[in-house]
Each structure stands twice: as structure tokens, then as C-alpha cells.
Amino acid sequence: MSAAKKKYELYYWPSIQGRGEFVRLALEEGAAPYVDVARLPESEGGGYAAIQRVLAGPRGALRPFAPPVLRDGRVYVAQTANILAYLGPRLGLVGEDEKSRVEASTLMLTVADFVNEVHDTHHPVGTNLYYEDQKKEAKRRAESFLGARMPKFLRYFESVLTANKKGRGRFLLGGRLTYVDLAMFQTLCGLEYAFPKGWKRFSKKVPGLVALREAVAERPRIRAYLASPRRIPFNEDGIFRRYPELDA
Image 1 (cartoon, rainbow, N blue to C red):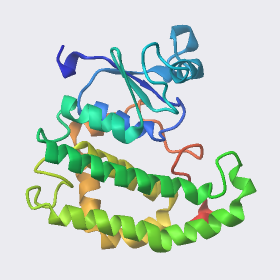
Image 2 (image 1 turned 90 degrees about the vertical axis):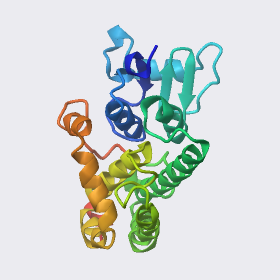
Image 3 (image 1 turned 90 degrees about the horizontal axis):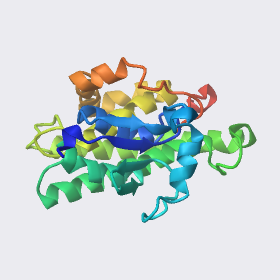
Image 4 (image 1 turned 135 degrees about the vertical axis):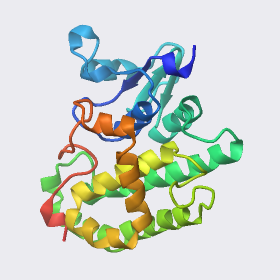
């Protein structure tokens, strides 16, 4: 069966974008039919119960630690970067040669590191605590993130974009869009939501990334997805959370 006719199953929390959004964007851009399983009613096999079932360990498959989990027939894939590395060649979102795939995976894992640091601005002590229980530590962590860590990551990706002669500064890797570009789009959208002041100040220093984000948003399938109810709005339960006191 061709990739275009496969029906993938995505298992992720139904009320947030979170890490599952990176997978959704790839599926949408790749025009891959899929079911966002946990967003279905429980009567149809959805809801949180669906996530618990897949985390319990599908028969004959390695038990995943946490969502997102992608099911492709009998194959179950966990971890965001790993899922994208699996989907990339199947959806035409990565080069066909090994070098391109390894480089895409390298960049995606770096994006994942970046996203983890974004999350830790509002939960620097522990995820088992509420934000209100660690506000003092969060403010200090956010100051460090906006002053040092965000600039370091974004300058790195800007330099990768500039150095990609084959993509002429339009893509992070190779001469056409890859899942890494989609992941960067999502990350930049999240930064603007969580830190509108900090992003506005620093975005002027990464014009290539800004242009990349705008170009991805205008791709027909992505534009249609963003305007649809399938795109869950940013909120204060996901990775990118807007707490004005952290956007110093």
C-alpha cells in the first residue's frame, strides 16, 4: 500500500499541541490519512483510555514510555524525533540518501533539546509540581533562557540555514522542505506565543528563520491545517505556555 493510502494512528493527549504537534504537521504536509485517536470519543475507542492502552504495550511491540506514539499497521513508533525519522522517507519529507537522513535526525534531535529547554522555563523544578509551586525558580530559568539559551539555539539554526547552499537559504537541509523545517516552524510559533516580547526583540537577528516560518505557513496543506479545527490552539497546558511574568 502506498504511503498516501496508509491510515496512520497517532496517540497523543487530545487537548494540547505538545510534542504530538510536530508529528501532526508532518502528517498534514505529507497528505497522509491519519486518526488522532485520543481525540475520538471513548465510545469509538478514543479518549485518554486509548493512550493508556497503547502505553500498556501493544502485543508483540516494545512498550513505549510516553506519547506521542505512532501506529503504522503492526509497527509502533515512539519518541517525536524517532517518529519523524520514520515518517520522513515515507512522506517525502527527507532526502533519500543516508547522509540526508542522518543530518535531518541530527537537526531534529537538536530541536527536541531546544523544546525541552522551553518547557523547563515554566517547570524548572519538576513536572510533578504546579507552575505556581515554582514561580520563583521559573522566573530565573526564563531569564537565562531568553538571555542566553534561546539566542544560542536560534543563532545555530540561522547559521545552518545560511550555510545550506543547496536550499539557497530557504530550507534547513537540502533543496526542499523536510520535516525539520516543519519542526522549526512549530518551535518558532511556540516561542512567539510563550514569549511575545522576547521573540519580537530577538527575531530581527534571525531573518532567515522568520522567512522560513512564513513560507511554511503559506504552504497549501499547512495553511489549510492551521485554519481547521484539527489545529489545537496553544494553551497553558502544553509545552509553550504564556506567563507574562516570564517574558521579561
